[in-house]
Length: 322
Image (cartoon, rainbow, N blue to C red):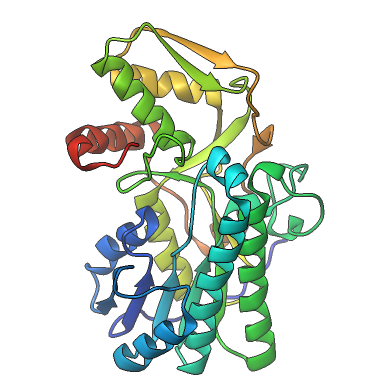
């Protein structure tokens, strides 16, 4: 039987720093936190470089947060991770080290570190349990990012064990929704497909070419679902082991592409270029731990994708595509 530790922590009345508030996850957190009685602290990257420990120290000293959601990270898809591995490793280590160390220095009450499902071994048994961490080799296409995230998990765990501080880590599944990164070369699969099929309609294309075979199985969750899950975990979970957050449902990339194709109303042909890598053959999270605590995702995939596609269409003029 899965056992989880529960330690109630109220966000009401807290000064909450959302690091990475401009990103998809951070902006979803801010939207949800506005509904409760708390003070939300945010800062733009041109005002504070989260990689710079001295700047972060000065900011913590001035604004005195007592709760931190660490959602800031350098992120990207397979091409970006493969092309700039040193940047992905260095920048993410620098961000999380400066925020976590200053959280400790300024005695914040609780910190949540957001990881990624890519932390798990490429050949991990499916669905992936939290205990699979560090039991095998990582997926090479995002190894640098994964290593940085594993270091963040371990840093929170070691601070917790050594100093008895309430630092926790969560592992979200693949996400989509408002605020996603739609850049042609740096986006993840959902944003990339939404952008591709939108352009196919707009340019009246006959075919769309996608990477790989279309056979890999993936799990997807709307970012607003994740935000609710993060607040639930922050208030109801306290343990040194990280906790998975996902929908528990999987779909092949081919089926997923056809779902977005239909939402877009495009009638062309999808072709898969097998010269490009698939990544892991299957990746779905074991969510028994969070389910036992009493939380589950609510937004059905088709409904969520319809919302995401509409958001992209409505905001197309202001979204960075290239």
